[in-house]
Amino acid sequence: MTVRKAGQARRGCLVALSSLFVLVLVVVLVGQFTPVLSAVLLRQLINASSFAAPPNFDAIQAHVVAKTGLVYDGQEAQLDLYYPRDLAAPVPVILWIHGGGFIGGKKEQARAYAMTLANAGYLVAAMDYDLAPAHHYPRPVIQANQALGYLQEIAGQYGGDTGKFFLGSNSSGSQIASQVAAVISNEQYARAMGIQ
Image (tube, rainbow, N blue to C red):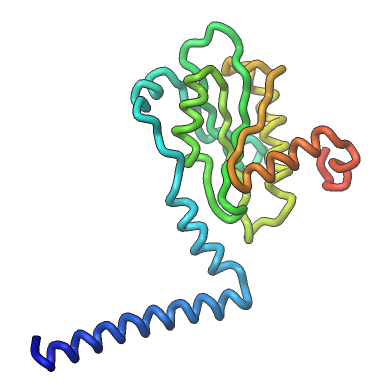
């Protein structure tokens, strides 16, 4: 390698490192004043992941019905239903609340897992909820409570046993699920949160 080519390679590397440093510096500085940029970047990372489908997922799909895009809050929040194609008797109902640090995630990420549960004999409702920073606490808890109410109304139409409801979740969805359980079981807490 000639001295000239080595110098060009060093300059190219220096430019790339300088650009990366400036980008990180901008993100850090902007992050001091607003969480929006950090939330957007993290949301992109979170939304890129999902549950891995099991090896027999094609067979599972053949035995499960998916009904997507059901509006549960009377406005725009949606859930997807997954249930066994051939039902001999009503099946337990699971409301699945996705994770994502309250700033990311979506119901579709749980699709393979929800279908696997449905294939095992459950009616699974995977819900979306409003994300931060555009929406604030306790909005996801209120929405999960609304989703449960909606499921109580419609689960029987899809083979769900309305006497057997379960909450399922991962990550931040688990925090939401635990608060929904607290709201359901503690009237004073429900009133304090403004949930009926």
